[in-house]
Image 1 (cartoon, rainbow, N blue to C red):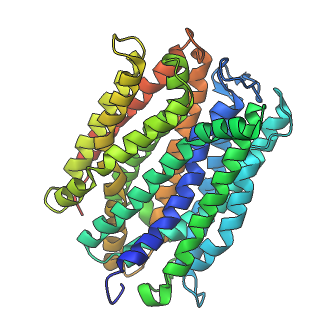
Image 2 (image 1 turned 180 degrees about the vertical axis):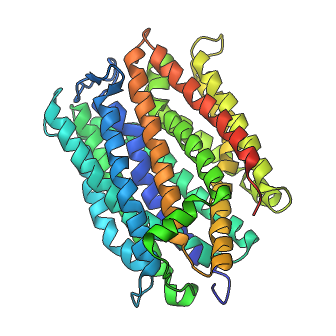
Image 3 (image 1 turned 135 degrees about the horizontal axis):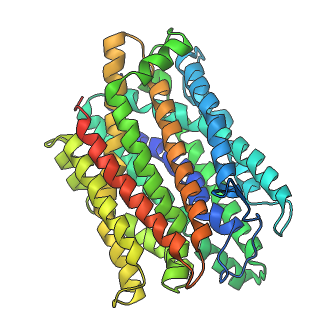
Length: 444
């Protein structure tokens, strides 16, 4: 562990890396479905056929799933190599350094289809490029997250640093959700008539911005100064088996997976909620996400205070159940007597409270699990724990995108919107189940 606490500025520098990759990964959550299979009133044409496999799985949902199968192999391998690394610059930073430029490059390519019409060529292109993007980002994310237990010794320090990380992640959500508004500015200010082109320029600029933020931890964190972890010696399969039999950790990632399915449905569906259910401009979606995140920041001091006084388990359970109920309410969006803006901004204010808790506490919990396991076994496998969690997170995001894409078959256009409403119900039920599952978690 560090001999002295990480300074405030170095905590900020470390969190900038989270901001960078949050922008990147949330652009996919916000824009992927909308860009390739937009609603009929978006001003864009579909780029991927809405054909189904077995009558259920859309092509876009299968593309998203294929990337996760690839991650099932690459995530533990990257974690294993990072945990065992003897690089003179440290076990984590060298991996992060080589991952940034490929992440930016492939992230931009995701939104550069081969043809601007419904085409199976776009299907294969997107499958390959998305896999390359996630691999590049994984090489950064897993070592990055594995730094947390070493940079924050003690439970209180972990909650404090996790608060910075949560703030960075939600700021990434805010920035990525502004993509439609930025596209509007590009169309109006630079006379870009093509809506797809406007989105591509906005997304390209945001990926470059995300990459710039990802560089900052390389200069603010010195592993030789700030960390004292030793390379692990346990074989890959033995480490993997050990983690997958860790009862507390399995309960954690099961609930965490369900949460990310739900939050991805919110991100993927927001443009549809405002455009199709409420007949508002797309740009309102970014404002809604921004209001939700900024309002949640008001509760961060409360989260930090309660986390040191109340079991984190109880706080997580309450947050998951509350978020689940709020998502169920989305089914009725646009049907009540309240004005459309009141409905959607009211939803944002309600979900801001549980998301504040769920943005901070999981990072602190998994860091405590990894640290406790390292003390017990004598093998520091932080990257492996975070690799499994990273895979679970991306799997949850993928299932969220898949579920939303599949349910669009039941209706995604004005006055034909059942699929969008059922997506919210699906996310709400999963969140409630996650809360019930987390009742079995034992506080570290």
